[in-house]
Image (cartoon, rainbow, N blue to C red; front, side, top):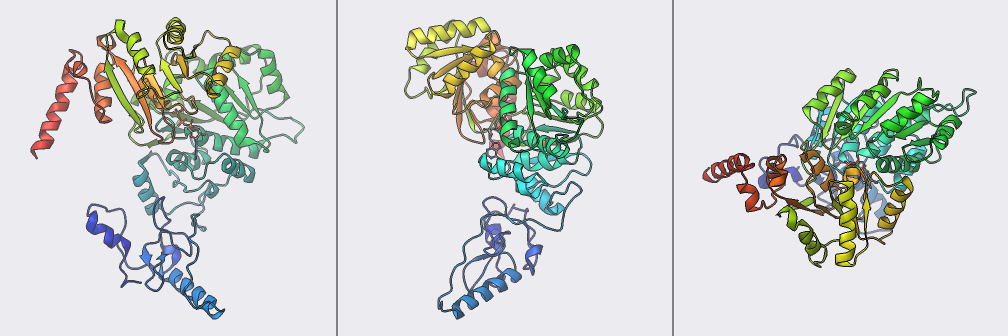
Length: 535
Ligand SMILES: Nc1ncnc2c1ncn2[C@@H]1O[C@H](COP(=O)(O)OP(=O)(O)OP(=O)(O)O)[C@@H](O)[C@H]1O
């Protein structure tokens, strides 16, 4: 080893503020070394953090133990006829601490390493005995078939929210989780739900199969998407799902539940309708998921959600959203005791991968501005979603786009039948329609495959909905663009918008800064800037 010179030492001269790595003595054994984080050098022998360089071979190595093994392997192979020092293939997969199983059966990181990982990935946790984050799905006791399905879905590594929320949910405790739009929250609740259901299915019992978990979503589109993902991840397991949404005949949905399912995915209204008209056994529901929880606990949905919740026998409550306010946290605390709170990144901020282009445009000129964007080779990046505030507005604008630009444009809103809604989404996904004009129905949660541009034609009334709508332009950190039209009519949301644009380092139109509704936040920002420059 180069006189024990570690890469950390090299690093520390570049980044003196990096205090993540303890600079202690050279590690004697492989198990004393921490795991490799994404991007770290990996030990060629065991895959842990390759903190040192072996001076004989120039290989990354984690400890003296691995160095000895490496050198002995090389000398064995050279005795076998190889005269030169042969490089061993670099190990790609991470190795996990084998003897640190926690009570969920997960192979857990030691607590100091958990803290380093959380810090690096912006994971914050609040609660009692929160388990360590995981670095691979296989470090949790998931059914083998589920692990295979995860792999065939192309999920090589858990995303940060999955790293923390999956082991936390497997403890059986209730969770409140916030993470960016498009960060993989859906799988972070489906994986524990499927694990629970598959492990507890009564498929071979004389009592038949009964629902074990419910996932509530605010829109039918989101239900369809989540149920599809659940089916994909649960394939080959004793795990069946039922979709309970308005617009499809109730008889078919009821029949499916009576035939035996483990998971119900539905909207609150239709589920209550079904539960009040028919006798459905809910005693075995052990997990209740409120996706988009801030929306589900808002007036409009709250009473229905609470009605369903009260019909259950104190299930584990899993609550998720990209936008969670302190009020929602408080409400969640009244529903269940001892909630574990997990947040990834800065709560309630917009997805960093989305570039915001705010344009100040008077209402009368908005249509023309939209046509300009759609007809500009430079600015239009199809397929795109245009968000509007009303159903009629969606229909009229889609027609106007088709007439003015010659492009196929379809509207999407809650008045369309389920059949129409499915057909529109299919055309869009098949690439046969470059523009969809939608109400907020497509604003939350829906994974709009391939969409990298959204145009907010009518600014929503709350910055939270704006965050969800612009989130449709990116998933898993891929870059997207959000064009947003604003004017004085959006006065309620303008101050929040200025703050969000500033936090995203996006240009802020002069009219927006000078508006009477934003002057106070705008000048607060200016003050901060001046102070920074002076010191
Ligand atoms: N571990 C993973 N590896 C690769 N892709 C993943 C992984 N987890 C999820 N995905 C994919 O990332 C995309 C976004 O995930 P998902 O829809 O769950 O995001 P979300 O956090 O629920 O977003 P939103 O807040 O908008 O609902 C999906 O296409 C999903 O299949």
